[in-house]
Image 1 (cartoon, helix red, strand yellow):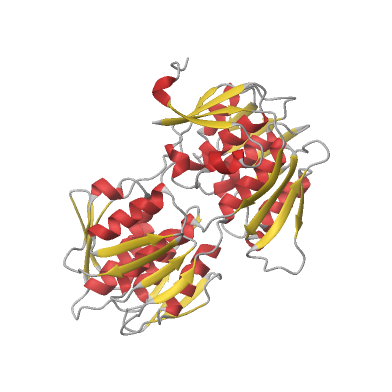
Image 2: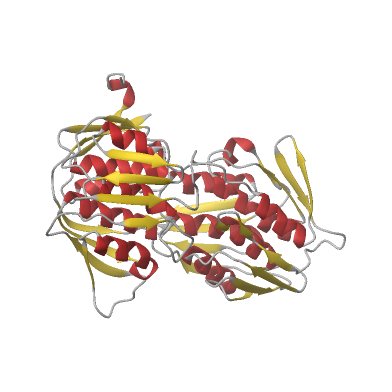
Length: 436
């Protein structure tokens, strides 16, 4: 198991190019199960989650060939429809194979998924959507078992996907993918509006689907008999972009972020502007693949944020923003409305001198003059990123353990930050002293 050893206090200068979105790529990869033709994807990042999805698809009879950021997916065997626990437990996005397998093969058996430990993330809305399309569902030994209704095809229906904490992104992806091959029209009400859903819809439409309304709360899908292959460039990763923008803000200097989907980050960039961060976008460029320059000439100012479904402030940037606001001149508050228990980074930031107080789903952040390097433990993907950001600004040495979480969603983070002035060394945890 690896760890990062970070020597903080160095401003960042240079360029970081944003990779293809993990959260977009995973359900798009699962969509390859909807056709027997090849699906060619560009800008697929080399991430642990991507590797795990490739392993899962291979087990489901879909060959995956990668070369220089391009990935070809091609179903060659449809005899297996069981997504087994040993792969599924590594990531929650594995549930996205349920809809495509059910729609194309008439049956699916998917183990209940794993992923980050950031609170309860039930799959009940996925199952509710499949049932609305006529699927027959049961639970057997921890596996979801689904079959199509008599006749062998799912049946279009109106599906409501609103949940206690807002629409479900992966549930929307799952139901939308399944409905492409259903008989008749499907309408998803309270659909997730995230850009990753728009990207998935673009791929499915390129494959011959008939989808309208993606990016709005109502998506309409008119089922077709079959889908064919396509070629698609995966959207840039807005969460990676937001993370590196905040890295530039907390470390200081002048950092350039290219291939930046700034148009998907308005809530985050507005919040950062309130905090005293200057973000200048290249004029006239594609706002989904532009270049921005990040700088900060004065102190970090306090602000108040509540996470919300898109286009609100993303829950996946909450931990990184908290790291930044620990150094603000004043008191801030962060309220988590998507995953109310997503605060495992709070105790670790406190080890570095942050002044944080949690009250239910809100954390009060009292800014301190400086953070101090310390040994800390990563608990999930985005919490890991927040600890790295804190380490960039802290005096002394910070050791972040369990960075395998980072490898799930950030491609060679240490190399990319080192290239712009950071000092991060990846080491084997066994070479480090035990934590207090």
